[in-house]
Image 1 (cartoon, each protein chain N blue to C red):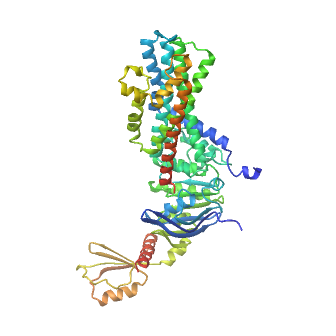
Image 2 (tube, rainbow over the protein chains, first blue to last red; image 1 turned 30 degrees about the vertical axis):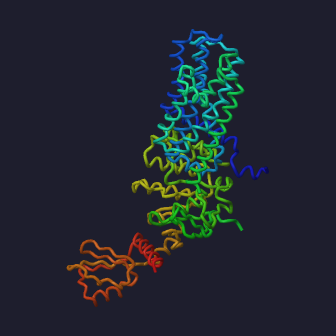
Image 3 (tube, helix red, strand yellow; image 1 turned 90 degrees about the horizontal axis):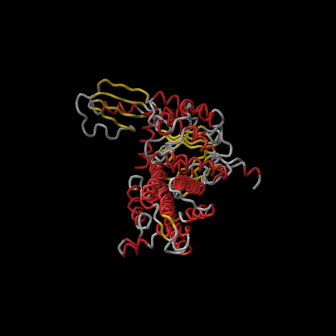
Length: 263
Length: 301
């Protein structure tokens, strides 16, 4: 691109960085959101670690197993609440209107949303990891920590799709109800809170199809062979399928909302 | 030749069964100070949305600097203050200016935008904690922070008291002196009169007048004829008379007309009981109402 043309518009990189920074700051400053997203996972972890932390199964301590459970819960929480309630709220207060009139490409705004949510989830994870390390006495190798981290990021995409579908699909007032109605059963049937095999057969069958279940399975796989019920590859394939379905749904709903407002 | 800053070419906009804009053509040139004037629901906001590319015309075209209004190069030269739009409540004034400035190729320093809007004392306050008037000033600052060439203000003074409105208009006027193109919608005539060099009157989706404020006033030098009746008006007392608008407030009758002599002669001939007669020049507000009423008659006929 010529020098003259590049001066006609602002550099996208700078725009993306600034947009992401302030998106993150906006979320962090909403106490209800940051306390819930950052505090709840570590609270649950502390509780269940106190009860089951010292049990040992398949060469893995309860502290380690539960850490992975609540790490997936923490990330899923941030994604579903961040996008589901955050976007519905922003739309409700017509934040999208002024933004749309700006020379900010919608795709930059969307990428900033995702990156900011990832950073937010990372903060939640660091708090959880720090607690597990200091109080839970969890010692994983550096490689294992990193292995867990990238799985948590990759596996989060179905939840981003779910959150965005809700955020663009329903109003600000109904979003909290819809998010909870959809997400709570999914979390409950994922095996994160207690093992899926303790549930009635038909609930197990339902649970085993859900993205939250495969997300947790993908995480537990890090801890060694025999810890998870399914292989990492199988979990990844399930998650990829869910990502396609849910992100596809989100894009459709986004386009619908957009054509209603801006055509 | 340089393309006009803003252009609508036979633009129509239909929402379902309602045609909000019914064929508007206009060109706004660089450095123009233009007011778009019209009652609520006249199609002003829709016109602005077409100019900004927030809405696409059902037929016809909109152009910003000769480009599609949604083009980033065109948008990078525009600032906007919209009627119904929010910003994140938890960011401070300064942070918002830094954020919005990053969308533009040559933004002004946040401090300069803050000074222009007179928000020095609120710079570190979160947007959610600002008063209504301060919020409007923030939106003004956001509209100018990219140092744009053309700025759109959609009813910028709605909800402001007289004092705040005057101060705010002063701010816009000063900014306009820097050679900026300003497009403002309003339903306050005095606002258009104070601020604009050109007034485009819009009513029911059509441009019904496009001239200087002085020309608009003189083209409708209406007179207001008012009188009191001791007996109620009979049916037929006023039929066939040449007036643009009629108001009856208990026993006080007000008629707006360009030919008061003919109207009065006819009233006396019909033996209408007239007391406390008064004939005065219509003020701007009334001139405007007469103008829109005139357009209404034409469309009905």
